[in-house]
Structure formats: structure tokens, C-alpha cells
Image (cartoon, rainbow, N blue to C red; front, side, top):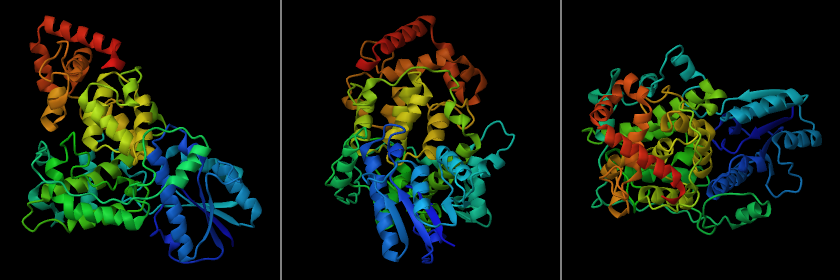
Amino acid sequence: MKILRIILGDQLNINHSWFKAINDDVTYLMMEINSEMTYVKHHIQKIIAFINAMRSFRNELREIGHNIHYIEISDSNNEHSFFENIKQELLKNNYSKLEWQEPDEYRLDQQFQVITDQLNIETEVFSSEHFISDRKSVGRFFKEKKTWRMEDFYRTIRKNNSILMENDKPIGGKWNFDHDNRKKWDPKINLPVRIKFHHDVSKIFSEIEDKKISFIGDIDVNNFNWPKNRQESLMLLEHFLNECLSDFGNFQDSMSEDNKYLFHSLISFSLNTKMLHPMEVVRLAEKKLHPDLTNLNSVEGFIRQIIGWREYIRGIYWAKMPGYVASNYFAFTNKLPSFFWNAQTDMNCLKKSIQQSLENAYAHHIQRLMILGNFMLLNATNPKYVHEWFLGIYIDAIEWVELPNVIGMSQYADGGLLATKPYVSSGAYINKMGDYCQSCKYNVKTKYDDDSCPFNSLYWNFFINNPNLLNNNPRMGIVKMQIQKMSDQDKKLITNKVVQLKNNINQL
């Protein structure tokens, strides 16, 4: 029986059972599809990183001895459609069966169901053999519960897989050491020198330009620095574990104007393309736990990102799609200010975070949540536009992981299903955890003066306009008390300041 197997661009798992044995009756089909690069406007580094990794994976499979039919973006016979390319390959060869791995994105899952319906051939769908939990596990776990808190699911994953456990109890006596992971950045601390790969991707860039694919962001095509294969991904992981993990926990919520990576792992692209497996990452991190547990906050904090937020977020996605993408709890309608596309703003924290994103296709999670997402929410931005911006700009943004993080955590657009409160703050938090405010033209200490930090008035106005958040959420008690103590005059000045800001939003 001749079999055609499909490999998608985020299914680059060389350890998948498909590849354990060479079978001359099996051909693998990989495709670079125009629409996959244009369904939102993507960062050029994101587009190239996927193509570079896919071509490297193709070469690796060929070297092992597998039959690979690979369709590049510039190939004249590329129909730029999964269905048409598959149909073309089936017509050319006498295949008896079509196989693929479960897509992680809902839109691709739907596409392949349509392909199944339209092609007269036996089909079979396989697991990607990547995640620790299955698609439906989160939905089953929280069935009929009003709120779906990550912590409960995280503890279950740890118990079921004996991760950081001792005699059925969490090592260190606590499940979560997040309270210890909130130190402000200390510029006196030495940072590790990061690995550089220096890939030449000029050929791929030329092919993208020839196809007139629109993109955002910058790139150095002669020194492209994202990993292209498992070997390089393992180098990144090893470097993080040896050089960064011990300080990761302490400073994982810190922000620095001059240090974009701090102690973050930079392995999310490798994980989301399946060049790394989450459980191998977890087990290697566990081995770095000191006998005296002095780095437990770092090890637990990192593992929680992998088996907590990552597995949990995927489960939210599959439990709530397709409707989740349209969530808009506050019915916000504003568009993104123009500076989200060019970093031309005098708000230094936004300028630096957006600039960094455009230059590197990367920002760490606190920049994404407490600067970029924070501003978008306080500005009453339509969550759809927020989702599309985050999906396009970041190297690791695949919809299953990006959408719930944006809709549920960053924008509170699901009304609190995922997050216990809106993740918003005034400039005080940004000043506490970072150094952006020191060189900003705006004054972080005042609310409604001409030079006041826009975050301050936007923050208080958000709660003045949404009193139900204060009345119905016990975590908002302090904010509620502060609002109650405000004079009517202060509230009016804040409201007027926000009107002024929003009327001139593109000139901030």
C-alpha cells in the first residue's frame, strides 16, 4: 500500500514514530503555502524562520532515507493550496491512503476535514505525539465549571506525571513560587552572552519578495538568529539551563530597556514547531534543581510555563473554538494606534517594546502582557485587532497558544473564564518592574497633568467606567477602595484627560 503523509510547518518532530523506520511505500509531502504567510500580516522573521526550519527538516529526512516531496514557495507547480497540492500529488502517483497529524490550529483542522470529504481515498489522522495532555483534557477537567483556573490543571499535570513531586507532595511544600519571582531588574547583575547562529536566509527572502508577500518587521538576512533544527534548539535549551535558569525565576517579571532577553529561555519557537518536546524540557529542568532547593522558584516557575500555561492554554483553545476568537466582553471597538506598526511614540516603554518586537519578532511575556496588552486593553481596543497583531508579530505565535493568551489573559475579552482579573496597571507597576520610565518624557508620578504618563489616567478611567469589575471581583478590593476615596473632581479630571489622550492617540 502506497501512503502519502502530510507534514505541516509546525510538525518538525524528528522523533515522531512516523520516522522510526524507512518505508519505500511512504512519501512525505511538505508545502510552503502562500496563504499561510498572509492570513494575517506576519513578521518577516517569523515567515523565514518557519521556511528555514521546514527546509532543514526536509534535508534531515532525506539524509535518513525517507521519500520527501517538498514544494517550495517559488516552485512553478505550487498551487498554494493544501487541497490542490495534495490532489496534484495523488493524481501523479498511485497512492492508496492519505495520512496526516492532527493540526494544532482550528482553521487547519477544518481545512483537512474538508479535504477528507472531497478526496476519494482512505484517510487516517495521527497524534502529533508532542503534547503532554490531549486536545480535550482541559474541557473535560473543567466541565460545567464557571471559571477555568490554570493552577488546578497545573497541579493535576504535575501529579499525573510526577513532576517536581516527592511522596505525592510538591517538592518544597508549595505548588507555586510565583511570589518569589517578582524582583525588579538589577543592572549590576551580569547577563549571559547569547548563542548566535548567523544563518544566511537571503535566498528565502528573495523568494518571498518575488511573490510580493507583505510583511512587517526587520531582518538581517546574512545573520539570521533563530534555530532551524533540533540540534540548534537543543543548544538553546542547554544554554538556558546552564547559564540562565538559576536567575530566571527571580527576574522573570523584570523589564530592562537595554536587555531584551534577560534570563528568558528563547525556546518557544522550537517548542511550538515541535523541534523540542515539552516533557524533555521539563525533565532536563528538573535535573537542574539544587539539592538545597535554593533555585526551586526558578525551576518551578519555568516548568509552570511549560506544563501549566502551555498545556492549559492549548486546552482552552480546543474547548472554546471556534467562537472564542470573537470574544469581546467589553464590546470594545477601537483600532490599534499607528505606532504599533512603527514604534513612533514618546511613551518609552511602548516605544522600546514595539521597536524590539519589530526588530527581533520577540518580546518576553511581561512586555507582552503588562506593557503592550495592558495599553491595548486600557485603550478599549477591539480584541480582534489585538489578536491579529500578536499573531503576526511574534516568532512563536501560533493561534492555539497566542489566541487564548490574548483573548483570555491579556484582554479579559472572555469575561474572566481564564483570568481572575484584568491584567491592567498604571505606570507605577511598569516603573517598579522596569527602567523605561527613567528616560521617558512622561511623568509616571502624576495622573492628569499635561505630561502625565498616559497609563495612569487610562488605568483609573478603565475602572471608573467598569464598576462591575470592582463590585463582583474580590481581587479588586483595593482598587475599589481607592476609587471610592477619589473626589468627583479627580474623577472628572481623569475622564477629561482620557478623552484628550484618545483624541490624539496616534501622537502620544
